[in-house]
Amino acid sequence: MPNPTQRATKLFMQTFGTTADALYQAPGRINISGEHTDYNEGLVLPVAINFHTVIAVKRRDDDVFRAVSDAFPGQIKQWRFANEQPFNHDDGWVNYLKGVTAAMSHSGLHAKGLDLAIVGNVPLGTGLSSSAALEVAFGTAISYASQLHLSPLAIAQLAQRGESQYMGLKCGVMDQMISALAEADNALLIDCADLEGENVALPESLNIIVIDPRLDRAAFNEQTLQRQRQCDQINALLGTDSIRHLSLAQLEAVKNSLTPEQAKLINHIKTENERTPSTARALKQNNIPRFSQLMQQSYLSLRDDFMLHYPEVDTLVNMLHQLVGERGGVRFSDGCVLALVDHELTDAVVNLVEQDYFKQTGIEAKIYLCSASGGASRIDS
Ligand code: ADP
Ligand code: MG
Image 1 (tube, rainbow, N blue to C red):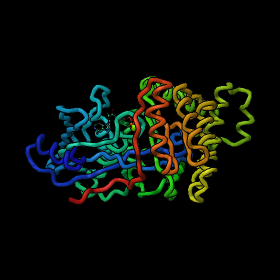
Image 2: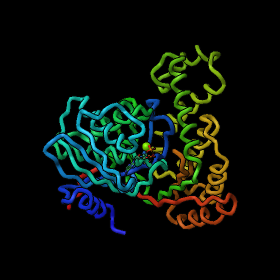
Image 3: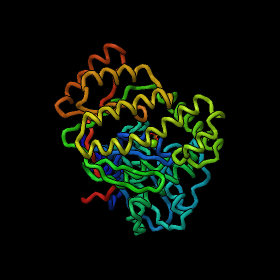
């Protein structure tokens, strides 16, 4: 199959009857550590992966945007800069693009219109952040085409505001930041309170394997939303902006008014914020046994304290854990199981998932072999 760049160029020609004048890309991501901490102003450790969204564009002289995506064939969406109309769920995927232009116009930026053809290989709605890849590729395209000279961080923040303010989705800035700022072969330790990022070189011995255990995604998303609402309730109850900044004295003062569930949620956020920099340190020091331990702790904390518990995920993580031991880390993240394992174990992991896991559960899990990619860019032709 032609690569995404060729496919985007072709889709542009077929849709708009002319050639595109530039191409842009942005990657999807995994997150090694820091689950549900990003929107709680905590620490996260994502890695951009070699799955990308590519957009072929041509500048227009007016302020009209026209977009087509191969993920939704036959739909040409159109809107005008600073005239996005209020969010309407039924408009579907174009809302992610409208959110970006709405955030730009609210920040006082002015951009010319574009015709866009979008193609990619980040699986949609699987937990590898196709939405941020789309937003960041688009923000990067606008910045170049309208000569806005936006930094990758500024693009990430605008993209996040689009999703949170225009679309009304509760999301942190992790997905957009890693898609915009990633360095190849590195994870990025992000402090979501001040948006400081630090590159963390990944040990060369580790391969990144993502396994989609095919959970009921709608039910999973609903549970995730419920946890986000519970975190909001805790913040409201405690009169704080984020659980991250709760002092021990504050916790002590409210201990008796917390439900057992609320106390467990707080415990996950607090301990995860300690584990994430430790995980980064273990990777930097190439201390894989320590990394393995921390990943297991993160997995248990998400399951037992943050109460995201799925029997089929347990089965898969336990099988992988037995195989991998201290030669890599395994945990559940955003609906997928991540295995960062010694490259000599890759074939054994694939076999285990395709054969043993399938035999035990009847589930045909999907496997993505990933590498740590760089962030969004213009593609040189
Ligand atoms: P994730 O970001 O984990 O893939 P989300 O539910 O956050 O899952 O975002 C998926 C949505 O993003 C899709 O349903 C679609 O609306 C939009 N999207 C992502 N990539 C594309 C694309 N290439 N073309 C059109 N829409 C896309
Ligand atoms: Mg998303």
